[in-house]
Image (cartoon, rainbow, N blue to C red; front, side, top):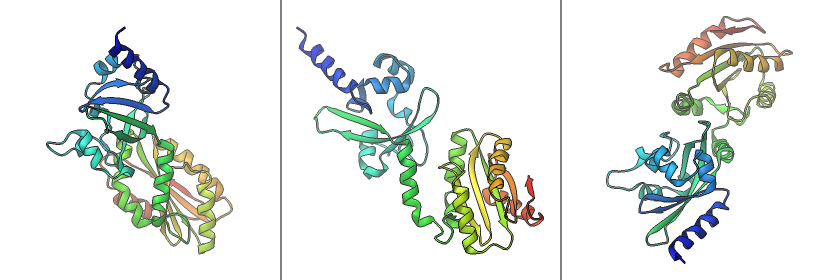
Length: 272
C-alpha cells in the first residue's frame, strides 16, 4: 500500500465534492486543483492546467477593482499581498472557457505549516448587489437615480471595464419639459424597470437624466434607448444617444450631447 498516494487520492476526492473552486498550494505554487476548478478552466487534469495556463497569479484579470499581480509589492509573494487586504477586498476576477469574466471571493487557510488552501467562491451576481448597497450613499434621494458627482467620479472605472470587455459605453440623455420632482422620480422608477441591473441611471440636472451602459454597437444603444423612449410616450421629453469610444473623454462627449439636446423639440430623439 502506498500511503502517500492514498492520502493524495483521498484529498482529491474530498475537494472534488466542493462547488467552489479549491486550490491546494505549497509555498505560493498550486499543487492540486479540484473538479470545479478544472471545469472552469476547461482542463482534464492539473498537469494540463499547468501547461496551458502557466503562473497561477497571471489568471487574475488586471482590473483596478480586483486583486491581481500589479498589486503585489516588491519582495512580497502574492499570498502575502492578498492576506494584507481587508476580507471584503479579497476578490479576484478570472476568465471562464467562454472568456466571460467572473468575480470570486477568496478565502485563504494557511494554518498548515507547509500548505495553504485557497477557496474561490463565485460571487459575480452577489458582487453587483453589494456594490449597489455600498453605493446607496451615492444615490440622489429625491429621484432614486445616481448622483452626477458619483458618475463622474467612477467614469474612469467604467471606461476601464468597457475596454476590458471589448465594448463601448453607450450614453442616452433624456430631457423632460416642465417636469417636477415627483414626476422625475416616477420616470426613474419606470426606467429602472426596463434597464439591466448593471446599467447606470444618473440624475444629471433638475430635469435631465443620463443612462450609461456597455454596448457592442450603436445600433444596440438605439434599441435600448427606443425601449426607454416607449415608456415616455405620454411625456414631453427628448433624447440624445452617443457612444464613448476608446480615447474619448466622458465629459466632452456628455457636453456634446447636452448641446444637441438643447436643439431638440418635444418627443424627438437624435443619434450623434
